Length: 330
Image: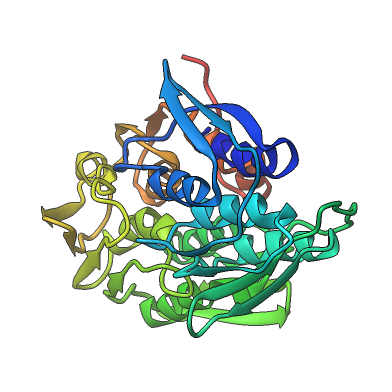
């Protein structure tokens, strides 16, 4: 799990030392942690990397005025945690603002950390506490899982009621779905009903961006949807340099997709055909599941261990809404 690197921040904050394995990742592109280490070093942490491990040690932790070279979710989260026990004020610039980051900030505030965020400037001021308190907080719903089922509704011409989500966290997804031809009834702040409002899917222009822009984690699901749109769509991937691997798998099912650098051109076809395909990463897996349910005939999706990293018992949820899906061991 790439997220394993997030133990680094709490270890530095509590013990001023730690030994952390280099994080894993997936094949969608480079996933460096240089920003995490750059901030730690500026705080006074000595860092040695050997045999796949990061050794961290500091006598004292210093406040910092630090600007991330790029917007990084786990980097922002890790540095917030590192600074949670530094009592003098620190400033972080060019921070990530994803809902998951803000959920962590809410927890740290309950623990006694003073954090002020200026969203327009992407800046945070942090004053930690030597002794942190316990906290009681609700983990936010998974906005990407919710968005995946919304795309599924339009892609399969179905009416799906999705509950236990936060509609404010997926506004960019809702906007694109409505343009594509979905009717979205917001029943409450945590419940929506999604269904097609016409017999065709409209093409889209999508450009992935940091939150609150369109999430890169929804790109593959929309590519599956747009493979049967009435016209040509354009998808620009700005976050990861190798996140179009699912395009060649969709092509096995009859999709017409051309890749040029960081842009995918998706020319809609009448229908997809069932095929045996291979998932290459977590969101590609979800996109291929959607494609399999859209397609005529049976599809087999291999390497679904990727899928299980981000979707809890997805086959049970799909069966509940009427999909014909079965997990196989071979």
